Length: 226
Image (cartoon, rainbow, N blue to C red; front, side, top):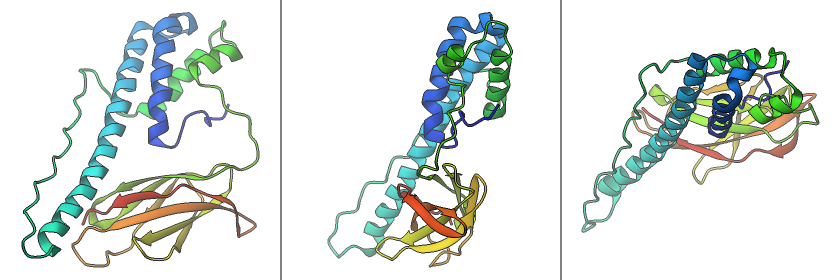
């Protein structure tokens, strides 16, 4: 069975794991789970929310630091010295927390689907039934700044075999920087100014027969880490 039900976008994983855990605690023993697996699912749901929220807060903090530095370095004489942005606190993790949340969740979903009492309705309740394949939709992106001014994009191609990736700097025109055929794209461009962070925006559009078609994704913005 397809793993289409498991979201590529990190933000969409928070509600999926919350719902999966809610159902697992209520009826998991009926569908072949054991108590230790129920506890693992609950920890994973909490950790997914904590990690994704921290990642988003860190991206917002990076942008705030850039704006703060610009005021200090570039503002007119007489500008008050701005307060330092407050960095987000690192999330804490319960004892027993484990990495590899996505493959473990797929494993647990397989256990549930193999239970004798499993039905399509049960799978729908748990959120582990793949949506029917339909026409291509709108691609989605999620940007994560890496060191060395690299940016990793998580790409949901929305049914297209490949998507075109565009990028721009604030106030500049869009430029196609590559074509993505997988679930990940790496923007390896050098910074405009060596050693300095910069704001980059990204969008994607589907491709068919080597021609761009369909709707353009929402714009995602990130600040690079030198």
